[in-house]
Length: 136
Image 1 (cartoon, helix red, strand yellow):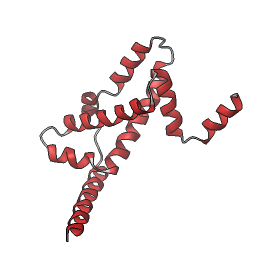
Image 2: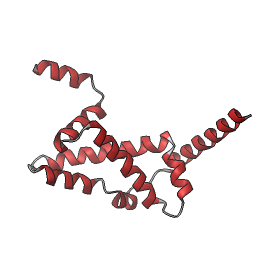
Image 3: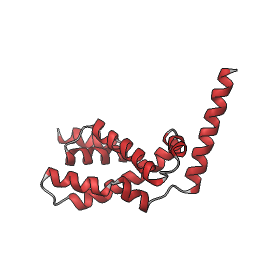
């Protein structure tokens, strides 16, 4: 049994192993984990560019933003694993996780690079062009 678990873990991508470890520590399903990433990403954009709902919608629809967001999410997950090792209570672990992934705090601390924004807008423009071509 143990060799089967090692084999399965070895065949997973590193981000999947990390996700599984976080889900185990928080007693979350994969869906709860993915919802946390998505909902916090949307909240982050609301705090990051509050006066630009169109910009928020633009970024929400781009792969580039979500790749950047998930990369930062994984970095915070790695830090959480180190901090939460000695935390026994599930409620305390969940509070720590929420604090480390707080959208308002993150909007003040991390910013998409110019490359992320430029590529996101390029994706948006390409999508608009594709939609226009389909309606012709």
